[in-house]
Length: 294
Image (cartoon, rainbow, N blue to C red; front, side):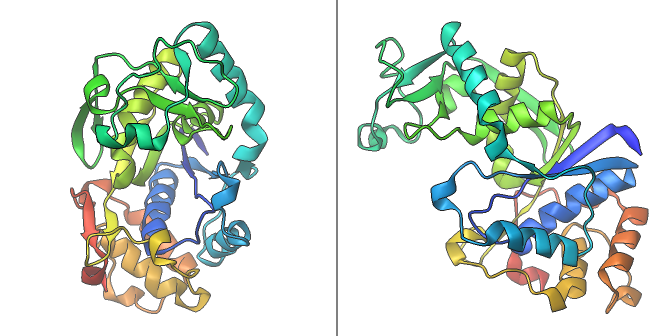
């Protein structure tokens, strides 16, 4: 096992695995296994009110049915709250974060970019969101599929939330801390998270954490342009379709699986995928239409 490559898949239990998340899981799995690396599984259960009852168990059953085998213990973010809280307290003490009492209504006219209303207000932390102070700097990186990507954090994002007003921890903070804690070297995920990466680069720099390599696969979308997933109340991926759907996922990733694999079992498809994995064949696109992959 090659510890110079540690990848991970991190589903969110606010819905079941759908075809788009299968594509992302497969890319992550094949990239890790083809490099002789470890593949970790982490349940990103940061938002209990939005969780679908039974989704966590359904996700695990689907991964097992589709032939995915992860290394080490399954990690739950709900067990990591003390670590997140400690880092937030440190950032507050250093003046790098602050309490924000702005409501959604107050921020509605700013196009999703925080205007800095509470930056110097000195609000109490209790009952407030915690925002990270963002510099007027551009953060750039080279994605292994999407190419060079950059974002001017101050102008395009503004100070972003690391703990919500209801006390729940934000994804941006948790994912950075957990990737570093687990030693993740390679992040393979959907292109809908490409825009989040500069924020994570800033947090990594601020906290003195290593920067993983990134690979963002195309997001699978519906004909109306919406992403495939929770808004469509996607049912769990059917167990009896594991082979055909894995084959479709391989082809969505540009891997030219031979016709002889039609009807193959998941284990055979994954073995072929590992032996022939070529990330350079993944379409250099932010999205792919689900209908075109049938």
